[in-house]
Image (cartoon, rainbow, N blue to C red; front, side):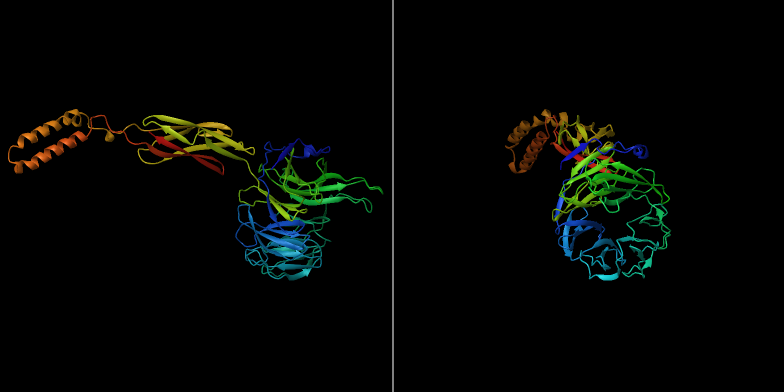
Length: 524
């Protein structure tokens, strides 16, 4: 996958720089090549949930062109398998509404809300109507009873935990657009025309004004992207961001100008708006996550949708990093799809009947010896250099150790230094033991002196052969055998053992990241 790094392309208006936190130095970001999955025509929405209760994230993709939903069950490693599609249209939200630890679907088709209960295999039961539709459904535990509820437009439906809901109750707003805990009190709040702080019982306080952008009443209407939430300025308070496409309010509409609007939270339900101009396209879709795990939330911006542009811009650490993530991404989600703790990305590619699954390739190190085999003479010392490489900006220290496996006598190993930084080297040292006395010959007593007894034994047998053969036959046989065996014990030079093979395992660790490599050792 190609990647282009640019210097900062968006110009921040006066005052924004002093409001944003100091940016982390680690701006590295890498993704693996996108994996494409076929879905229905013109996919325009995707969500992640656990539909079969196996603890692995699954996907549901809404297909605008074929008016259905494609379900893909996750394997836990970032790959997916197709399940039967569902003939559904409308807004989708997911959650476990029946208490069976399998996520169900709520569908708002514009006239009614319906619950589709998961069967646990990627398929769903027949939809059950639960209420009239009055807006966009938002799911949370609004009354803190550990059961999921639904806020839909001006009403709220408190869940019973068995797939049924209490009668709709008015919540005093024309429609919520986002649910989040903006004041960090553990109670879900609603963002509608203003901020409605939750009371924790399914009711809300009166709206606090929110600094939404203005727009023309009739002419040259502005366009906005989706809204995302994260702590964007590092002060511990929840913030919001959105793309804003505006033009002059006149009969002759000017071309759109792309802006990024930041709404920085004060932690009490009030926000202040800061505007930043965008110089990398029209921000039509935003995604917020800590993609490089440096502790600071990042933004991903899809500048175009219907045009089929595959480019995504990541605003990370004072840089804009551009990636090609697929054809025509119109909707994006971030989720850890392979369990490595780093956010991955799924894009719904409107211009193709596909989605792209793009796995994050986080900072990592490699551990490799200069050679995979090492030969050392017994009783001698050998060594080899180890290279600790870096990937995607890895810069932490790596702790090193080694161990030996094989037959006795066992060599010993050591690594110096025991801790190194990425892109540095270490030295593997191997010590082998000398020859053991147990494998050497017995010297003089089993050498030339005893070997000289062989001809004397033969002469003795010839001398005694003139006597009683039967009485001396056994004695002669024993004499020759003993003489031969005596010669066979060696000449005093010792017996060299055969070459011995061992496996040396070198292990490296840096936090939760662990790698190992093996060197094959031959002791001659």
